Amino acid sequence: MPENKVDSLDVTLAKLDHRVEELEEKVKGLNSDNHESHKRMYGRIEELEKFNIKFDTSFQNLLVTVGEIKEKFNQLYQDIKELKSKPAKRWEAMIGAIIAAIIAGIVGFAIAQFFGK
Image (cartoon, rainbow, N blue to C red; front, side):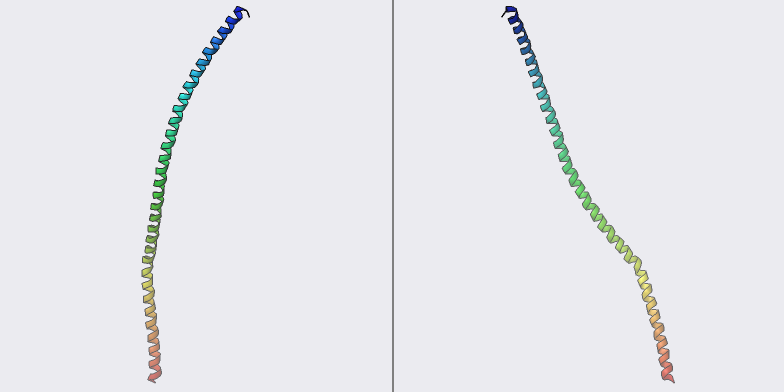
């Protein structure tokens, strides 16, 4: 092999070695950057998971509170309905007593007329 070709190959190999070293350094840098990026992403995911747990707990508490409010509202609604119907019941009882008194008076008058003769 001519000396020129050997020198040319040595230069080419040296350039390739240098290029490989540069690429290896870039890959190491990228790996380091990726490692840090992944660390930050997983940290954020962990924070979001913790927040999600707190949010779920708060939401469950809210649902329980809404259920309790609904029960109290339904009870108040029933109480109001009952209170509204009481005057009507009293009125109905009074009308019933008046009708019974009238009927008793008529029956008493009829008996008095029947036995009074």
